Amino acid sequence: MSETLFHAYTPLILWTGLGLLLVRFVPQVLPRLMGRTLYWVGVPIEILALARRTNVSEGIGLALGVTVAALSAGLILAWLSLVVGNPLCDRNSLTQDEKHTPQQEKLAPVLNGLPERSRQGSFILSAMLGNTGFIGLAIAPLLVSDDALGLVVIYSISHNLVGTYGIGVFLASYFGREREGNHWWVQIRDVLLVPSLWAFILGSLTRSVTLPVPVESGLQASVWLVIPCAFLLMGIRLGQIQGWQSFRIALLPAFIKVVALPGLVGIGTTVMGIEAGYRLALVLMSGMPTAFASLILAEEYELDRELIASSIVVTSAMLLLMIPLWLVWFGQT
Image (cartoon, rainbow, N blue to C red; front, side):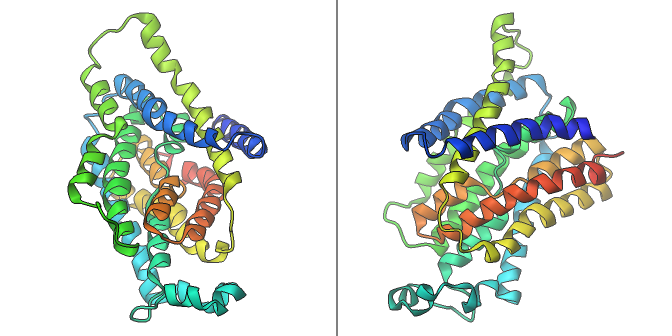
């Protein structure tokens, strides 16, 4: 296992650390350019390459089912935490400015004894949405067998479509401010334009098509270019996060995201008799840290940005601690 962890952690720590070091020197436009390039080009090419080398049709039902179950469990656990524990209502967790600023008091109503809505939305998104695209597709292929790569790809795509662009947008809109032009058909259009979806379809349909050797080799080699770029972007984005006053509040959604959800997935798939390779792939993807997309939704719908930013940092650190445990608990036959 030590050799496996070495191969997985080396690029993660190396490239993420490099991103943290470079954050003060890179132009402000670079992270956005990297993110959009990965979103529209890098990750779709990686998914295309992975879909061509794996039989994704065998595990599509399992991956979709576990994805929906994990998203639902995250939503339920987060909501129950708000209703039962009310972790966001502790006024001691706020700064002195937050306690005594009339404008913030006006903008932070408490409904039915629950915390104000912007923090509710951020709390739920932090506990539910994972970074299955950039980080999941960069880490999981290093730790699972080729037979389980199909589950990794399907989980990533279905999580983004059903979770981020489906339930995530709905919840952000519900807990955030009303936005003009936020029509249902706009959201459907955005889902249909997700490049990873079409790359997955193209890769699945062309598995039996033999490409020229240089093209096929370049396609497969591109995966190892996307992985360091994703980690580098993660380091830069982590270095740019400001306002980490919500660390204590972020511990609970981080625990749900990186400990409770993959634990439930691991136990559930074990009870179902799923083989170890597939089980580990599903556990890894369900335990990915809080998605950067949650921060984008927070910006768009006026949710609590600090809480989500803190959750991203906490879950990213917790991931390093949890991976060895997942390998031992769920990677064995």
